[in-house]
Length: 188
Image (cartoon, rainbow, N blue to C red; front, side):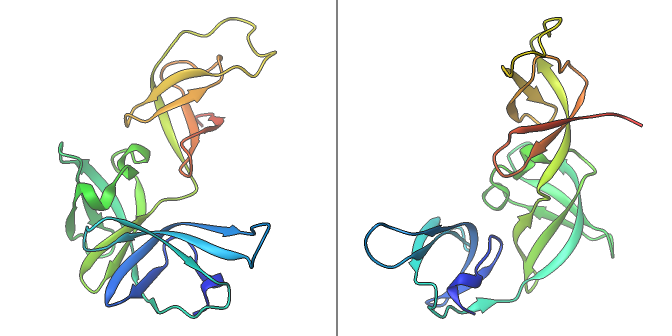
């Protein structure tokens, strides 16, 4: 594949080591040619790596199996247990693999887990998730005229900033890209 086809979640085989692309950026410097800056996580847990590619450079991609799974519970040490929705097999995922994704996942929520062979290597979250506000300062009546935000903590432990009219127990839509508030969600 060409380097300009790389997207977050793409698996690359570089020097016999498997990496998952976590972030990608297209950079056009004032001098010199444009390039692609990729931030990658080594599947074997040896850390993060940043790599520059020219747009036409050929890189070796690897196919990963995508499986729909349900997050069951947090193990208390930063890891979690997930269940395959097709065959009901349970898989333990480590803290290193999950990183901060559990902050965006309430128990019994679905996600896509990427597998290389039989080994889970990454989690794909949707672009936005719905979480419940567990703690925030009380709202100020009539405080809708300005776009000031207040601190809030979601039921998963995620800290974000919400408008002043959001109260404890309300459901909100949160971006998984940067953890920012997107909208209030009305219960049906």
